[in-house]
Length: 308
Image 1 (cartoon, rainbow, N blue to C red):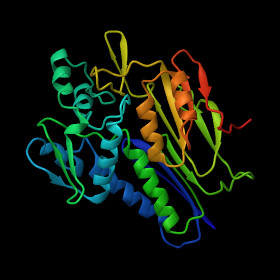
Image 2: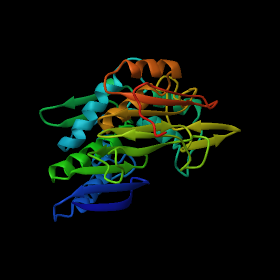
Image 3: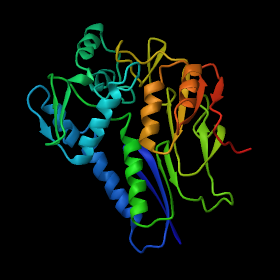
Image 4: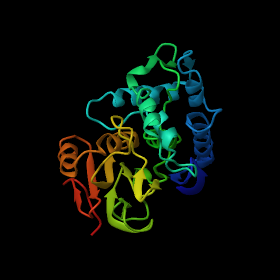
C-alpha cells in the first residue's frame, strides 16, 4: 500500500490530508481540487461564490444552486430550527456586523444589532427541494455555513478516499479531524488526536484521544476573538441577543462517526452549561464529548479512550 500526504492552505487554515491506497491515481490531487471548489462555491465572504448569489438576491428572487450546496443549506435549516440550540445558519448579518476574526472587526451599535436580529430567522430561508432553489425572504439576509461546512467537506473527502479504494485515511481541516481505517503507524490501529489546551499556545494538549473511524471536532472561544474597551468577544453568536454567547465554556469537543454531526453538536450546545452538555451527549447514541470551562475545569463522557 502506498501512503500519500499533502498539506494545503485553504479556507483560511492549514489542511492536512493523509491516505493509504494501492491506486496509481492522484487521490490527494482530486481531494485538493474538490476542496478548492468547495471554498469557491460555499464562501460567505467571496462576492462571486455560489452561496453569495443567494445573499445578493435576498428579498428579490430564488436562486438555483448545485445539489451539494442545497443539501447543506437544507440540513443547516433543519438543525437551526431545533429549539434551545445555538446553531443558526441565518446568522450571516450578525457575523458581518461584528467581523470577529477579520482585521476590520468592530463593536456594532445597538441600532445595528437590532436591525440584524430582524434578519436572522431561519424560518425565512425558503427551500424548493424539487428545483434546488433557495430564497431568502427579506432583503439583507445572508446564510453563513461556517459552523457546518468543514464537517461536510471532511465527510465528502473521506467518501472520495473510500470510493477510490483507500484502506485508511485522515483529514484535518483546521482542527476538524476525520479518520477511517487502521492507523498503520500504531500497533493498536488507533489514531492519536490531541485536544488543545485553550489556555496555552497551539500544540499544547490537555489530553490525547485514541480514535478509529471517528471524527473529532472542537469549538472554542480562544482563537477568533476581538478586544473592545477591555472586554474580549468571541465569534459564536447568540441569536436572541445579537452578542457572542455568554458561556462558561472555553472549548467543547465532540467525537462522532461523521464530522458534520460533530460540527452540528458543538455549535448547538456551546451556550449550554457544562454539566448539561455532558448529560446530553451521554444520552445521545454515537456521541462522546469533552468540555473545558473558562476556569480550567475539564469533564468528559465515559466512552472516550485516552492515551495513558
